[in-house]
Length: 68
Image 1 (cartoon, helix red, strand yellow):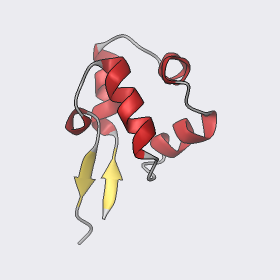
Image 2 (cartoon, rainbow, N blue to C red):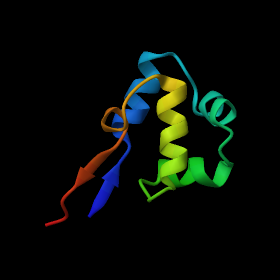
Image 3 (tube, rainbow, N blue to C red):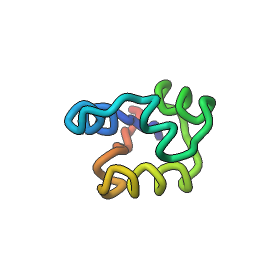
Image 4 (spheres, rainbow, N blue to C red):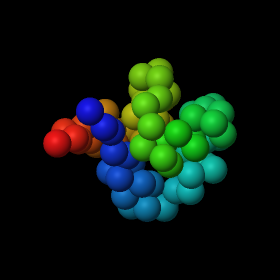
């Protein structure tokens, strides 16, 4: 199974927020942000912090893609 964070990037655009702003607001590392950019798996704690900052639910930022 793969993950996609396209919804997260669209939400950032809607909120007129840059990736750097998100990184600072959540306290995540640049490595974690890079993993998000590559659609790699990240710690759920990071996803929870993103949801808190953006005032959204996890399904608003992550999509599970079936690899077939």
